[in-house]
Picture 1 (cartoon, rainbow, N blue to C red):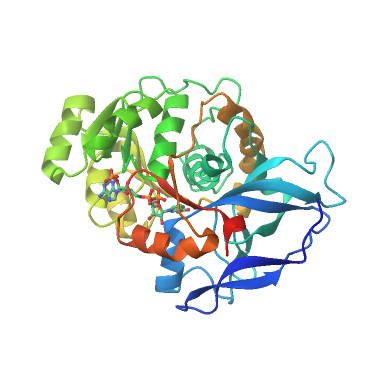
Picture 2: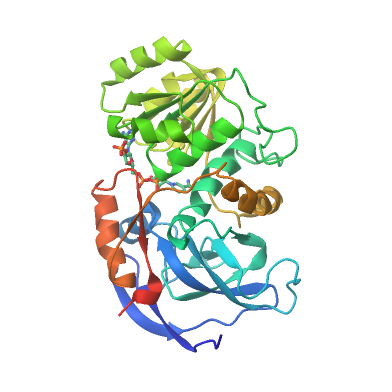
Length: 358
Ligand SMILES: NC(=O)c1ccc[n+]([C@@H]2O[C@H](COP(=O)([O-])OP(=O)(O)OC[C@H]3O[C@@H](n4cnc5c(N)ncnc54)[C@H](OP(=O)(O)O)[C@@H]3O)[C@@H](O)[C@H]2O)c1
């Protein structure tokens, strides 16, 4: 296919600025890079938080977006043909420049990426669903399974390695916010690792779905804290070996910490400082998820995990999130982020098709 020189991208011009769809140059792949045509991009809460709070990014203008699927349309000269070829179906996060504290994200029609942080995905998975996978897998699997010294991780033995499946039979796992995108992947990795029971808090209408992912029990997240604890006590003596708090707000921290067994592990997705001190006093371990494959501390585990993903997805061992596709291509992102910010998205991932941008 011929490679266009220009594309549409959703640009955030300045800190606290507005998003506008602009025409920009199509990037050229470096020797180790892939150029991908983005078919589906998923919306993540981080994108509205960066715009609203001015966090994480320091160099503007910037294109946000950290989850997408597409087709490889050009391959850098140093990428081996066994690794990637034109026509491969690819899933990827945005490309982060740590030095400049900026990112070239997935709210665009085309993106170049270092091939080491791209995974292939199988024919049986549609582009929309595939776009939901990578940040969820990263944010769950890295803080659970990264064995590298200094990694903030529970350091469990990974289920994608031989001997890893079912290794934690008899150990209990709680997912606070089971219906979140992250929570859905936490339930699935807990299942692959053999944890039982696997308890999830969620709105009750998600119970049947979350059980298909591996939750053994779903507890109504709208119960008062004391009632939730009473429910946990009926299932797992009230405390769990591993707790994954996929919500990590002031409402959920006390519950999550109380539900972590002494000596157990609590993984949080936001603001560990608020509870780190209290957790230490109680002899509990808190780990802050850093859901980026490209982070230097994550790289050793990223390669084998990304290589194992096509099989995990093909067999259905890891299932993507359910999706809602927004109309208007990249023009749909702003309204979608507003819905995420207003907590109006429940149990699905919002998706846009950059190629449909008018
Ligand atoms: N640290 C990292 O690297 C990293 C990476 C990615 C995301 N994150 C953060 O992780 C969090 C989750 O992201 P996400 O994309 O998974 O979110 P999401 O899918 O957009 O979350 C929506 C879900 O949140 C659930 N929810 C809201 N409040 C809840 C509560 N008090 N208890 C239980 N469930 C609750 C709702 O559940 P119901 O439908 O059941 O009502 C809804 O389905 C965000 O804060 C995000 O910024 C961090």
